[in-house]
Amino acid sequence: ATQIANICDDWGLTLIICTNVDVTEKVDDAQGVHIEMADMSVEQAREILGESKIIGGSAHTFEQIKAVYHSGADYVGVGPYKPTKTIMYSVNHLTLDDYRNIIERMKEEGIDIPVIAAGGIRPEHVDELMKTGIHGVAVCSAINLDENPEAVYREIYKKLY
Image 1 (tube, helix red, strand yellow):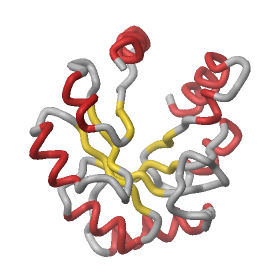
Image 2 (cartoon, rainbow, N blue to C red):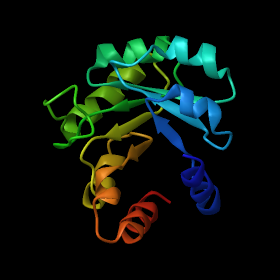
Image 3 (cartoon, rainbow, N blue to C red):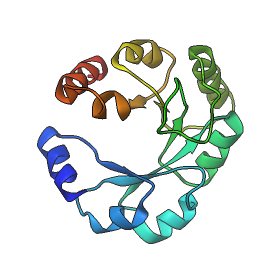
Image 4 (cartoon, rainbow, N blue to C red):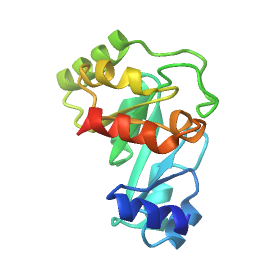
């Protein structure tokens, strides 16, 4: 994790460690942790990490987004968008319309938390997802499993910035 944090620093990236609050606490350059639905609560992670670290939570439904919002999370990861082995809690995939509807309902109910689309996202999905009103995308397998991870990263980065 420290080596990855150093790489992220070199690239100007934010390192969010998935699930492991203990590692996040020990790696000074890790900016935060993402809490999956079956992990500890956002509140418990906040007790351990304090206010200096970013804490995100996972959701698949609007009701789960509300729960993550009220738990004090800094962002909510919503998915999966496409089939993936990295999000095990749901086999139901969200559509572009689902993301649009979620964003609209959040606005209607005054829920102001960044939404990060996650799950099976590839570079060719980024443009259409960003048009739904989400704040960003979380990408894992598309980069990690590619023969040229740097090229995939650069392609996604160009679409976002």
